[in-house]
Length: 180
Image 1 (cartoon, helix red, strand yellow):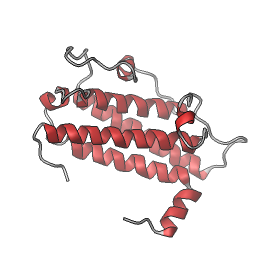
Image 2 (image 1 turned 45 degrees about the horizontal axis):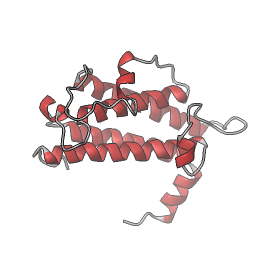
Image 3 (image 1 turned 135 degrees about the horizontal axis):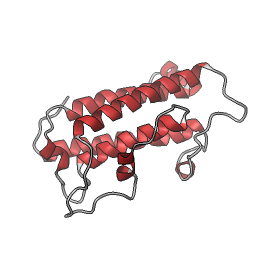
Image 4 (image 1 turned 90 degrees about the horizontal axis):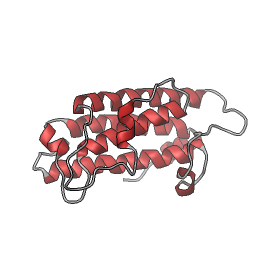
């Protein structure tokens, strides 16, 4: 599918609004993917992949981190540390105690709403001198096209889409019907 010139130029001229729309769409996609999944599906390991439960927690924790980085007053929760990259449970070992799936889905959705609202707000107001930045961008700036806010958020948005695809693959491998 080819993107129209006007849609493409609108995204280029308003990148934070475009990212807000992408994160909003991904929230809808998560709802679709979660429909019909039981705890056994969320906690199952398919090959060497992490369980969908870990991926969901990782995405919820990342969205909370991004919302905080953009200025939302959102207290960190103890459970977030369990889902940082590098904290994955090894294949064959039992899952550590994680929050309930419904709680993680709720946190993913709430953090997504805050993230979208903040991006839409930032699109409307003038950027501070030097532009908007994510204080903890760190290594992300090395993999994105730019170390600025839009470049870092593009990386996170792409990474989230990839992880949603992993949950979709787990659904398929578990024999669940397509949510589409």
